Each structure stands twice: as structure tokens, then as C-alpha cells.
Image 1 (cartoon, rainbow, N blue to C red):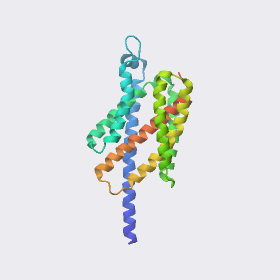
Image 2 (image 1 turned 180 degrees about the vertical axis):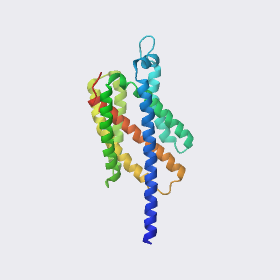
Image 3 (image 1 turned 45 degrees about the vertical axis):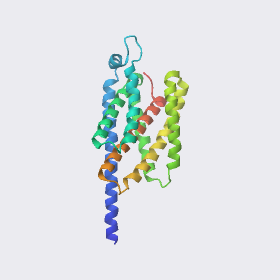
Image 4 (image 1 turned 90 degrees about the horizontal axis):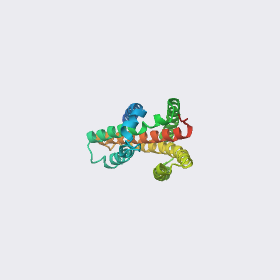
Length: 236
């Protein structure tokens, strides 16, 4: 009996490890795609050619690139059950590419050293909270729900501040964002742990949920990085 239990436990741990390998594989793939595109798009020439009108104003294409990932992200997370894995992958890659185009603007504002150092700080904070979320025995459901509501408020405030252009409001949004995105990292890691241990899931559903998990962690990491960059980054 003990041997059977040991085999079952070992099988469950292997399923969990494979699930998280896929989750982080998707996350790092998205970061790689976005980073490469952002680097090549983050030049004055590129921005002038595609995102500035002949009259010197911001072009509609810039706003499409900036806000299209929001719609794509919602579509992927809300409709993944009805979409095929292939379609989900295409949408996921499109999301990563659009985010790269959107993130290219940070190279016009912040120094390369500031971006690199903030990325490392973000990676450390993200890893710490991910480990905490995976290992903690405390139920983070209520905590996560509260943070998610705050996140929605931050998103709305961020849109408003695009037009207000208030440095003070931007600082407050960034400061609160650091707390929100680190907290949500722990919450989502705990949720993903529960998903990874659900043996009733089919192989296809497990693959889809791993992609969704990678997308969620990618979104959290990017938002944490941007929040810290606004607080710590030195502008050129």
C-alpha cells in the first residue's frame, strides 16, 4: 500500500513540475518576444515613422498598439475553453508582439542602465513572491480578490492620467502598483499550484491552463517592472 501511495505521490509531483515548466516556458517566451521587439521599436526613428502624424501628434496607431493587448488578454483568459490550443497560441504570440511594440517607448524615456537594473530588481521581487505564494499555507483568496479590485482601480486611474498627465498621480499609481502586483503574484502562484494538482484535468485543458498561467504571470511581471521603473528609473 505504501509503495502504491509513493508512486501516486511521485506521479502527482511530476505532473505539477511539468505544468510549471510549461507555465514558465510561456512566460519567458512572451518576455523574450516582447523584449526583442521593444528593443528594435524603441528608437526615435521607429516612433516617428509609425506613431507620429505628419502634424506632430500621436497617431491613432499608437493607441491601438497600446490598448489592443488589453482586449487580447481578456479574450484569451475568458474564451480559452472554446478556443483551440492553436488559436490560443496565435493570440498569445500576437499579445506578446503588441506588448513589445508598446514597451518600446520606455527606451525613449529611460536610460538603458535604469531599464536593466530595474528589470533585475523586478525579477528578484517577482521570484520571492512567487515562491511565497507557492509555499504558503495561508489561503490568499480574499487577499487576491481585494488586490484585483485595486488593480482595476489602478487601470482606470492610469487611463485618466494619460490625459491629466499628473506626475504626482503617476507616482501614486506606481507606488500602489508595486504592492498590488507583488501581492497578486503570490495569489496567482497559489491558484496555479491548485490547478497543477488537479488530476481531473485532461491533457489539453492542462496545456491551455499552463498558457493562461504563463500569460497571467507575464502580465504581472511587466506591470511590476513598469511600476518600479517609474519609481526608480532615471530619465534620459
